[in-house]
Length: 251
Image (cartoon, rainbow, N blue to C red; front, side, top):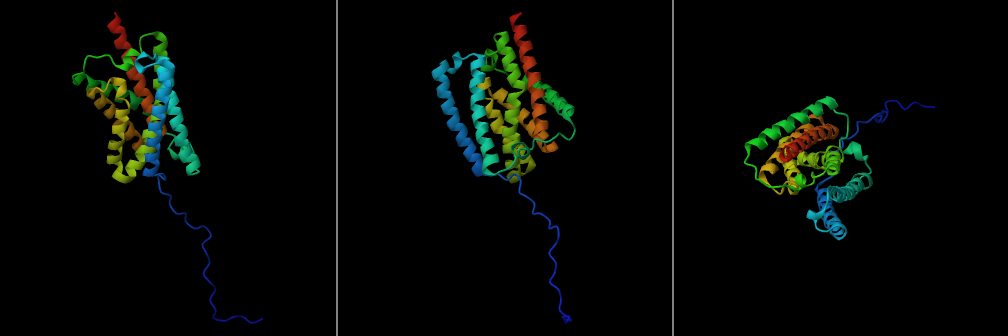
């Protein structure tokens, strides 16, 4: 057997090649447009069914109104789940940054309380109109208060944070940068709450400030869970304030 003198061996392939960094978010504006269209279709469909079952929205009680809202949001999140899990084959919660908060739950809760107090101070400086909002109308009896309060500090913040800070904000940040993304996501978040406060521009400003704070928390910690805890604490303080105001008006 002869030895091939001078023949060089081919270079060896690396045993552990460096993986290509994955683009995040992996979804895009086409997915966003699809989800917006789905929200519009579901809103019309659920709204019409609600009118057939319960009559016009103003005649609905707290349980009926929350049931309609939950039906709409539940169906829409089914579509969102399908986009992430079925469309891309990725884990739903992890993809939307539902990870442990870096500074812990208590820190996020504390920021939520502080944000609520700051928003209350902003609200006190604005010339608020003297009108009864749909939210206040739903706090007429004890059962409605308990139902609205439970929804406001549990399911409501969770669904809103996954939609705005979990899905929308990373997409906007990837296009407009951290500051632009946080600013832009707060606009539709405030608009979502317009009907609750009879489209009062003063309350829209307050909700815009809250949306900016939640977006800052999501960007700062990299955790949608953290912004959700913050949102829950914020809603709890606001709800307790509304209860206190309602009690004082009755006495």
